Image (cartoon, rainbow, N blue to C red):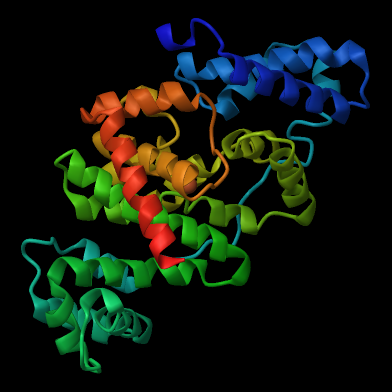
Length: 338
Ligand SMILES: [Fe+2]
Ligand SMILES: [Fe+2]
């Protein structure tokens, strides 16, 4: 792949840093410098081989001789096989909402869905009374709330309320805030690309749902994941080192279990690998993640940021300038609300 022909300096520095960290995990023994650097290279170049980071790690370990594999195995997948437990079920109302479409949904249907669940009712009332809709009078019933915000905004508010409960516990709040930011960005990017915005918004809310799986992991695994993140490993890489799979793969498994549409599942599964050109929705999610790094300063979740941004932009036919304009608008919005 042309984009990978030469490793740019910052990426080379990151590669060296990660390799050093892996060696330090092996007691700093210099005899492991080469295999650690090779492992990191195998992960980096998985992007041009169409492989996931987890597959690249498995492939590299599989090719090693017994002694080297045993040694590297003390830091890679050393805590056993991870099987997520007690995964959440999709709220019923989300299933009902998914079965309707923006064009064919009536305010009456949305009213019924909102009334079926107190969290949804509260969500739509909150939206209707927010400064954004500039109401001079307090709206205190669901019918008026739906009328006030209109069908598209009501659907957004209801989807957000459905998904928010999956992230209700305190440790998940940060992921929820990130998911909302990505959903808003996905909505904007889909608009620029002339795509259906609501599907992008919902995909944004759910894009990192796989991270819920890791909450069920043993403490030791969480600690290892955290230590790799602190050492500068992008999230996807850190997860693959500890859990054998990343959050995109776990997320797709969960959404499949919920029997959500294939296009949504595929976009979530590949949202960190836009070079595979799976779908426009996948590219939207990738760029929305990128906006989160750029505007909300969240840590990078994967490798090869520039190459992947370019692949996603090409897939959608939008320019770097359009993305930069959106970043500027979002930064101004964040400043204004601070
Ligand atoms: Fe994300
Ligand atoms: Fe992600």
